Image 1 (cartoon, helix red, strand yellow):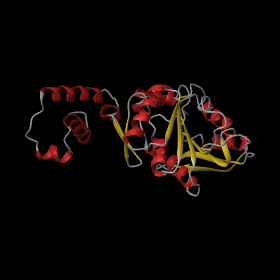
Image 2 (cartoon, rainbow, N blue to C red; image 1 turned 180 degrees about the vertical axis):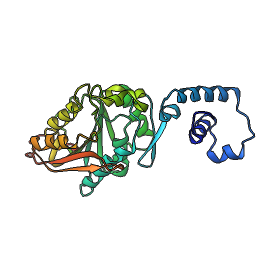
Image 3 (spheres, rainbow, N blue to C red; image 1 turned 90 degrees about the vertical axis):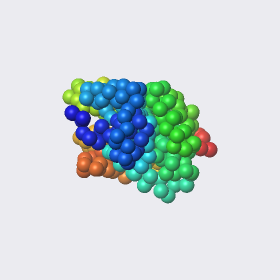
Image 4 (spheres, rainbow, N blue to C red; image 1 turned 180 degrees about the horizontal axis):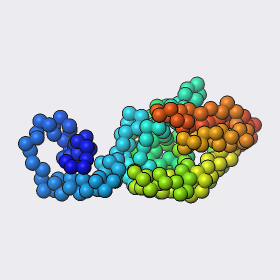
Length: 274
């Protein structure tokens, strides 16, 4: 098919027909129904116009699981698996951990942590009701039944006194006016999930400044960020009193996820999960 890689054409045909790749090969003399032909033509035109494959077929794999995606949420990317792996490593010795995923989007981090740690109590927030609906659908489809979903502007709507062993977030971190926002897949993704409409650090600042009131002693805060924001993020954590600050690199070797440990005083109020 002119203009599209053969793999993408097969993916669209599989989506339209419900046939596997092998079935498409063994049944290559079959013809599409009128409805299938129209649906395929529509998807083909949208793809040729640049719309991401993930939105066309409605799913994308993350951490070995298929997640439903819609234009309400960012498309899951392999880079974010670094945050999932770093979170799991820091929860490895914590029994029945309590976890908060801020700005959950499609729910990839919350669901992954809930599935990999079946003993965890996970909370997931997002300011977008549409995104939260997608995340809830993914949790249900993937058997992650210990997640509490909440429409919230970062920490704002969380119950008072609720504290966590780990907070993780993939917040908007692209600066306003960045040329990447009008290129490639980013043109089609929700703008408010991509950019803070500021310097790219304002949401990271908000997350760091509010974390101390929501972390248990020795709890961890982990955040994904832009390839050139690691030093600034480490400085935010250091200035706020975090220790054991680290940065993990993504598959391309770029600094992608930074975190630190909270050494605040033990709260007098109720802890998360108790």
